[in-house]
Each structure stands twice: as C-alpha cells, then as structure tokens.
Amino acid sequence: MATKAEHPELQLRAGRVPVTAVVLLLAVLGAGFLGGRLSVQKTPSSAEFVAVPNLLGLTAHDAETALEHAGFRTSIAAQLSGTIPQNHVISQQPAAGTRLRKGTLVQIIFSLGPIRKSAK
Image (tube, rainbow, N blue to C red; front, top):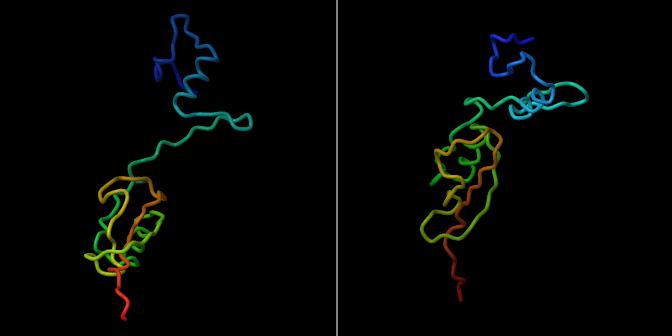
C-alpha cells in the first residue's frame, strides 16, 4: 500500500482520501474495475511504436514484407500508372517516418502499369 510520503497529492487536510476520490483518480489514470478487481491499463512504451518504413518504389511483395517485419498489418490496393512500373508502390498511407503502434494498418497502393491499348 502506498504511504502518504509516496503520494502527497492524494492527501487531504484531514489526512484521509474519500473512496470516490480514489476511484476517480484511478479512472483518470486509466484504471478500471473488472470482475471486482482493479485493472490498470499499461501505457504503451516507446518500444511499442515503430516508424513506418519508406515503401515508395518497392515491389508490392517487398513492401508487404517490410511492413510485416516492422510489425504492421497491410492493406493493398492497385491503380493504373503511366509513370510507375507495374507492381511497384505508388503511394502509402500513412507517410514514411510516421510513428505508429505495432499492429496498425498501413495502406500501400501499387501500380498496374499504364493503360494498354488493344491491337486492332
């Protein structure tokens, strides 16, 4: 149990803290009561956040592999492009360098190549 010296912010002039004040403080700090037990949610550490890698220009397979190794989930879409080679990443969301929690979904859009004209 915490002593008064360890947590002077919990002390009132009378020397006692009402139970409702303690419950309110715990709620603000992210604690909750589950099944009659106190549960405190862990604040994510900086190690649980990772920078999104730069995927532009990579093949769709290499980009997906890089995201998997970084701990992200992948959403893939495709579109036509006259400038980006087929099967290479055109864009990503969020941008490279954005720090996200591991397991977050990162979208990549890869090129289907240019519109092909049919032979007549």
